[in-house]
Length: 214
Length: 243
Image (cartoon, rainbow over the protein chains, first blue to last red):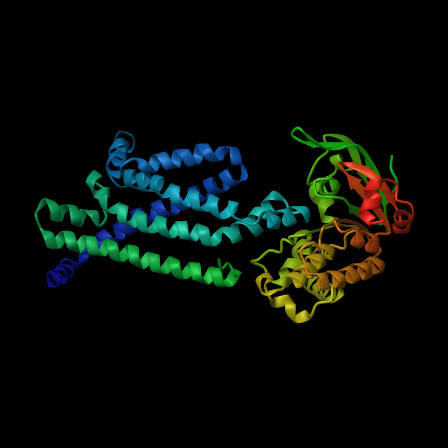
């Protein structure tokens, strides 16, 4: 089996490289969008506490919609293809980002915030110089989960006509070609593990730089 | 209205919900006063302090600093002119000691890097610490050292007023004595106004040039330490000083 998988990588190298790049493009776009929007929403709900039940409730709710039905629900609005996949993946990426940004900020020792405020920091100074750096490790942990999840989830995007490694899996299933399915799945797993490793390393170096050992 | 170099409370009231902390509170603190405010917890002494730097706003009444109503002042600028030290210190764990002390000078950016770094060294020695501590981080320091760094940080913007909220409440007895000596030295050297909150009467009488005894949001007695000791006004004060 393993041998056959490597053989298919070798024989159909171009096909898999194209799919991998597509996969990275789709999940990468969703990761960037999800990270930016999620971070902003997370900051908003920690700064304006009243908005937190609404925004957390909504992101939680979206998270519970099965991915396949969310993709289906989006088709009437954004059609089939990569756009719909990126929208759906971005929406899923929000929850871990929002939740961790919020948790990271609210868990900061209130005495630190009070000292910063009492010394004449503007709310922006406090956010930028104190809150975000101190919340970084928690935010990065959420980011890591989100990246792994998005890369894995992007595999089903081919069901609505988007590209990516899901194409190989789907084709393998429909043509009863087990080797093809395994080859696609292995690449997705490898991408996810590799990103997990990279972000984990980043987390450690930030932790060391800012002495954020918990 | 108002004198220069003074902080004046004029009929200030403040409540938290139903709970009235201060009602019609009047107080004048002038430059070179070292005012020690003493009272039991919940008597409103921290509220008084936080009203001065605008962390709390009065429900009614006005507070003047240097003759200006602070409600009409830029709160950020107001706080930058006042040093603020709290019991928990609140050092920024992700910044080195040097960066912690230079926090406010870096915010106002009125000095260049060299100027700031010289100032940090000067402050470090003023609070009785060694220069090698500058590159270390808060987690590597003892409680007493942290409080000294907190003090240095509060002095970094050359404040006219130093607000201290039970600053030595969480350090051990020996370090507290040393820190008390240190703050007296700094007070004499820099000629700043200090408002110092404590629940330790011995500390209040030792440090303050004036001592304010508070209970349930009211001023019970205000005077020099010897006045308080010789003529305690009420039973509450007598009990407090233990005669």
